Amino acid sequence: MASARGKDGSAGSLRYRDHSLHGIRAPRGLMRFSDHEWATIVAVAARAGWSPAAWAQQVAFAFATRRQQGLTVGDESGDEILDVLQEVRRMLANIGGNINDVARTTNATGELPSADALAEMLVLLRERVQLLDTCVAVLRPGLMP
Image 1 (cartoon, rainbow, N blue to C red):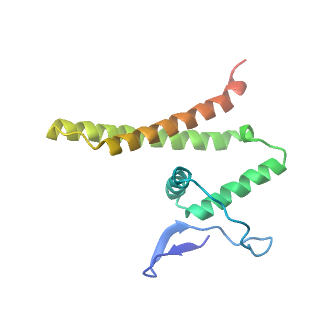
Image 2 (tube, rainbow, N blue to C red):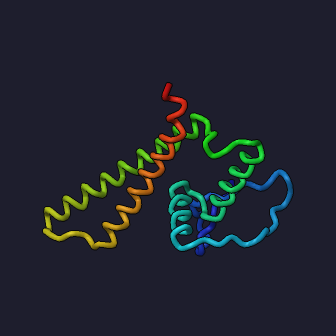
Image 3 (cartoon, one colour):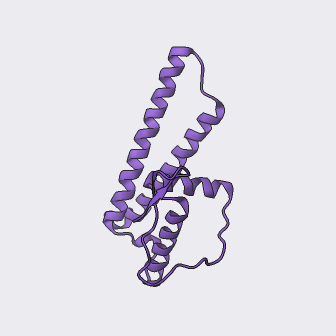
């Protein structure tokens, strides 16, 4: 896995995909994203330490490979589901920490953060709850008699 280089030539921290064992990767089409979709991809890729393009390519190829093998999104292995649940738990803990920081600052200064900052935390919280709902829906058939 190659590391990214910053504009100043220093070693960056973003990960890129390894070279393909199946030949050179050529440009193939153009993908378009809404601002919300792109912001989500950028945020998730950053948390994983990947560039957004490399992360999207990796996820798209993994999904296509699973589909080609006849698997669907609900066929994740237990390890993959546990990884997602651990990530969601970590993110919810971070959100809880953010809410505590807001409360502490509000109590100390008497001022609330901007509506935009609060809305951003709420969007993040809703996304994580939706991801948990998806995990529960996948796990439920195997856990319920």
